[in-house]
Image (cartoon, rainbow over all chains, first blue to last red; front, top):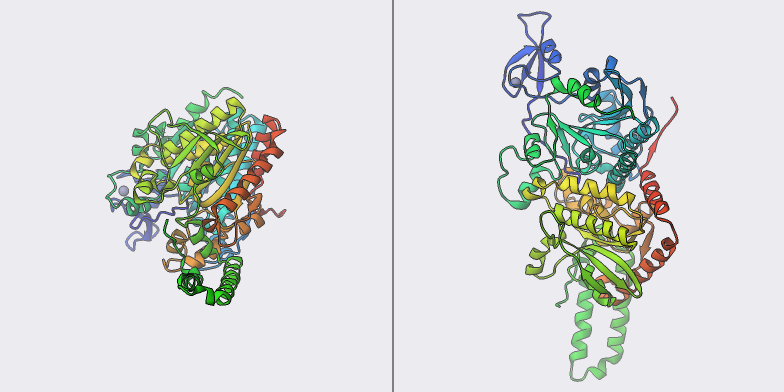
Amino acid sequence: MANWFDSPGKPSIKTSTKADIPDGLWAKCDNCNEVFYQKVIEENLWTCPECKFHFRISSRQYMSFLLDEGKFTKEIGRTLIPKDPLEFIDTQPYPKRIGDMQKKTGINEACIAGEGSISGHPVIMSLLDFSCIGGSMGSVVGEKVARVFKRGIQNRCPVITVNASGGARMQEGILSLMQMAKTSAIAGVFAREGLIYISIFTDPTMAGVMASYASLGDIIISEPNALAGFAGPRVIKQTIREELPVGFQRAEFLQKHGFIDIISSRKNLRELLVKILSYVSIQ
Amino acid sequence: MENVYLPFEKPLVELSNRIQALKELPNSEDYKTEILRLEKTANRLKEQLYTNLTPYQKVQIARHIKRPYTLDYLKIWQAEFIELHGDRHYADDSAIIGGFATIDDKKLMLIGHQKGRTLQERTFRNFAMANPEGYRKALRLMKLAEKMRLPVLCMVDTPGAYPGIGAEERGQAEAIAVNLREMALIKVPIIISVIGEGGSGGALGIGVGNRILMLEHSIYSVISPEGCAAILFRDQAKVEDSANALKLTAQSLLKLGVIDEIIAEPLGGAHNDWQTTADNLKKSILKNLKHLSHLEGSVLSKQRIDKFLSMGEFSEPYL
Ligand SMILES: [Zn+2]
């Protein structure tokens, strides 16, 4: 499940200051090599103005343009922090890995959740952060997602999840696997209540997250070119000993095979959600 | 079938060979006391080996080619089995079997991963690595069981769901996710028994139950020790370290609160004594079914949902 996929040479934004423009912070798109003002990239919601490449961004950045006021009105599970139930040590102890990540990213865990609104439509939302141990789902992520669906049931309110994950948090072993059953079970209770769930895939949405709550949206929206699937491409390639087709497991591939409703650019996403939410009658 | 020995069983094999050689001598009567002595030593050694198994040795036992598989148990139990095929959408997946079964007098819906032994069987069963159709067939049969008010028994024994191009095209992730959601809601008892390898999402895809039982030397893990070694330890040789770190044995999982019961295997493991293993497994399944049989459908579903909602360890300090 935990097919952490790695993607060497993945395009990213590199910021650098150029000597000839003293105060200008520049950013280069690694996908097309064009150089832009950092501000232009930001105004473009961290997509390349030239080649439309969608850069990986943090959950905070995602909230900033999706939610009214750019933030939650009430956070869910804000103080939840991970434990080390397996006393797991690989190349380093798990608590150290978490500590380093917290220092680097300034966040507690890979998931942030809360209540908010989109153009006045109330929503309960969870967002994953790929920069936090690959957005992997351990006990804290599972608990936050579960609470999001519970709050959705309480408030009779639609749920939106924004996903970016390599899969299960392997350092929490079997407990991370069980988060798949946990989040899917509560998504089932939520669905039985007749409530609406919108799932959004960003690059990447894989393995344990994809094979649980992320795939259970009534409406599934994806950013273009997002990688989404069960097994990592590397694992598949090793298993079948064949080259994988071009575009394999990308959003467009998934849509062709019937698993994604809409592919939307990041810039159009908020407007699209507002339109869709206007169809979700007051529950 | 030829005997297959695991690396750590080597001293035991040497002893058995010596005993066998002595027994085959024309004057074996003269060696009676020697044979008896060696047999005693062999038994002691077996006990020593099998009561101090490392996690990785358990991995090897869980994957043992002579370990009984789902259909073997049905045969030993002399259970009636009416197999039902297909997911009604695309294909019949022979990596997961399912159908009506009668164990003693108990009628139920049986679903299980099925491994193969010969090369031909293994290919036919795809090494018990199911495609989406396997999970969809399993769910179809569970819903049928719900309609007929039959309890469901799932036998888990897979290295994982199949990682292939077709599997992705047909929605492996979606198939497993839907099973996880729907199994939580089903209104008949569901008992899971892990009989060999519990390989990640491929195992969990038929693994959401009211009671989760595990054979003593079976394993259940988020990733194989081989995968963990390559990805987390960044060293493919560190398989044993990975097996230790993952806490994938039945004993560790009971402590973590993920499973409910460990079913004893005979000394020397299930592969050395199918009958005793099958007896123990049957006894536990029937006992657990009995405990669940008086519960109403909605209670069964709620119990299952609450069970999985409570899984996970975190802290929540007040700030
Ligand atoms: Zn570009």
